[in-house]
Length: 150
Figure 1 (spheres, one colour):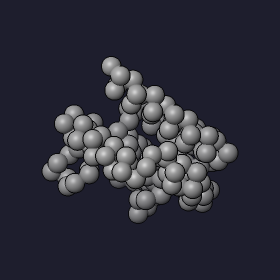
Figure 2 (cartoon, one colour):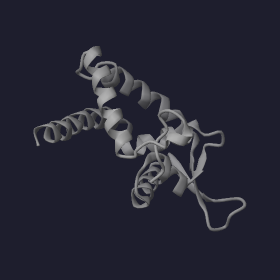
Figure 3 (cartoon, one colour):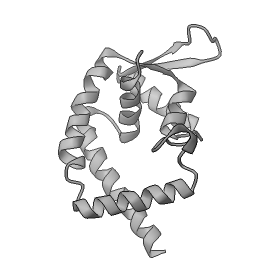
Figure 4 (cartoon, helix red, strand yellow):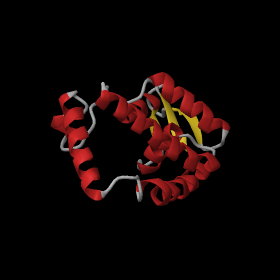
């Protein structure tokens, strides 16, 4: 129980730090993740179901994030050009411009100094990766470090 509680509380602390850095950009971490994912695609767009699978989140969470991103003018829904059943989510030019600024702030204010020493970071990453692998969180056929599609 102590280990689970420590991991859960640590997650809350880190998420609070991340959210406070993203707040001035009008983003939550989930919305930032979706924008970053879209910014890495060749076309800037993905089917909503594929975005959810890559982020390992429930379709409702993707819908909520897209709703908020649309309201902010950072993403837009559009029909798939060849599959009428599929809806694409596409990053807007404003969203594309915001991603590197938000990422830079996260790198500078959170990721470059997460509150752990390098040895602890290495050990934590190894332990948590092993745990996630045992829980089926990685698709071993897709190569090292690829997350499983839920």
